[in-house]
Amino acid sequence: MEIAFETLIASYLQDKIGIADHFISDALAVHLQDNMLQLVREKLLVAAGTGNDQKLVHDTSVRRDAIYWLDKNHHNIHETAFLEQMEAFILYLNNSCYAGITGYEFHYSLYETGAFYVRHLDQFQDNASRTYSMISYLNANWQQEDGGELLVHHLKKDQHIAPTQGRTVFFKSNELEHEVLVTQARRMSIAGWLKRD
Image (tube, rainbow, N blue to C red):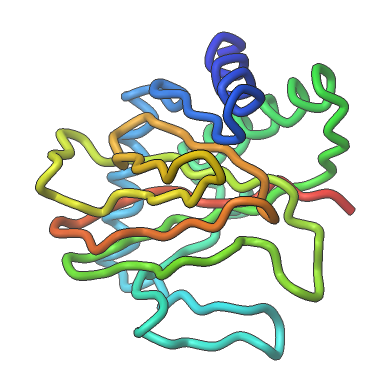
């Protein structure tokens, strides 16, 4: 596990975008995908919005994914396994880079065919607690023609990242604007933030 942690951190330090292709094991990714599809069948995902608290807005011209927040209190062994891996990564990050992360939040994110999320930053204007953004992908056999790439707008060069199973992406929430390009297939991920009080 530490090899994947180090890969993510080293690539972030090199280029401000950390990428680890096998951060999530195939077995865990499949279990999380199955769990997410069960939540879809139970109609438990909700339309995602932008903004926080009283400023939350739902605008389908900006964002068209549906989400479901992960929580250990759900007592789902696969959600818990994912969150425990994130906790282990936070401990490793804090010990090796003195990041000062004190919390996290993660949600499933489902983009059906035709869905997208326009260019944005992940940090709220009135709350700077989101420090790092992390996205882990759950899409087996993703093809280039499926679209749905994460487009990160970088000072050096824009970077297109395919949402392939097991891949995790990591960057500062207040630094890099990014967007999800229109997907041509059902696209599944877990997105979230490492937070600092």
